[in-house]
View 1 (cartoon, rainbow, N blue to C red):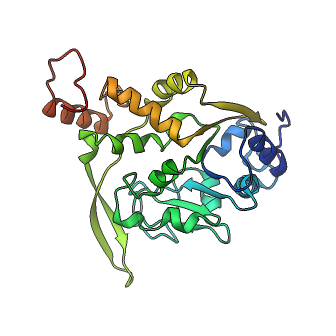
View 2: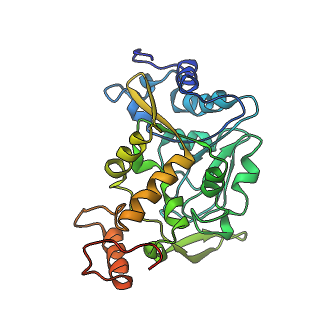
Length: 281
């Protein structure tokens, strides 16, 4: 564990390796660059800046491993895989720009990857829903990749969406429009399924994962890191949803996504029942 105010690339890589990640492994990382030293200017938090952390992620699994990060667009910009910025933090933006990194082609929820498995994991994302079967996160779950949370909690843990897909949750059919840049430069609007809100996930996912002994922890600088297996994340989430279909929905009064999700659940199942119906209902 490092207590230095300025983190180095090698310190970060050693910290993640100390949790159990090895050369040749698969890993998906969610991150907050600010978490390394919130009270310092960005240029003092990490030697080499966010790009150093992006490169250190490769160091952790090298040689032979592959790393993935979310580079979600969320429909904020007209989608183009090479130019649309990531809205998942500066580390992910630096990662997608690394020489040799590639990106899946999904208009709202693309991932970037680097390593020998990247092309296989990311291919065909434009032909499936964001986290559905044959999506990058689904494939990482099937291969039980490591999930690394860098200065963030489970509200950033996209792997839980795979559990919603596995259980075919009724609220998955929410829709959104997204703009996609065509080869000739024109813009085409497409209608996509919209993944749900994750604001409640830190509170609801952490207890079952800890009860399973699934979370490994360390820190580097001021950034607290958690490491777990993709299959544990999905298993814990399935357990929650089997007990309560609304377990992942937040209680924010102005959250339209969760309000719509509750309406969809109520329209399909008996809203008067005090006991959540089984998944076979």
